[in-house]
View 1: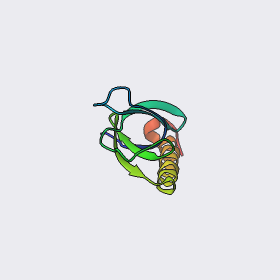
View 2: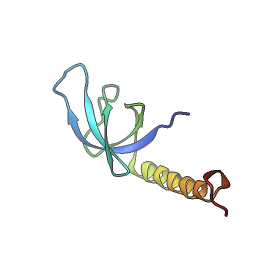
View 3: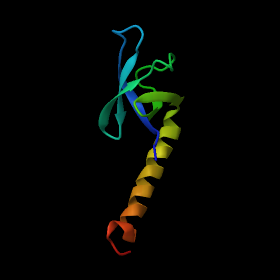
View 4: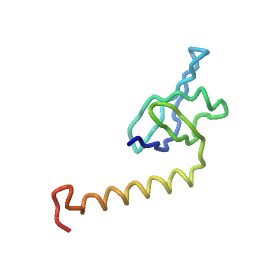
Amino acid sequence: MCLAIPGKIISIDESISELRMAKVNISGSEVDACVEWLPEAGIGDYVVVHVGMAIAKVDEADAIEAFAIFDEMAELLLNEEVLGKNP
């Protein structure tokens, strides 16, 4: 299963005119993502990244809500028996 995750653009590299790349902060980790399909995306914007491609621009509130949901999911999984822990 693949997952698209929101992150905040912290820098953009336009040194190759055909391939606009960005450094994106996703929960404290910096990843490279292609932002060629989102010409309106800039530093400080939130984008949804899937397999190294920024596929959509989202507002900050939606990104923060998604982070909260991911945190809640992680906590629930840690309490599941499938991870070797009893509730």
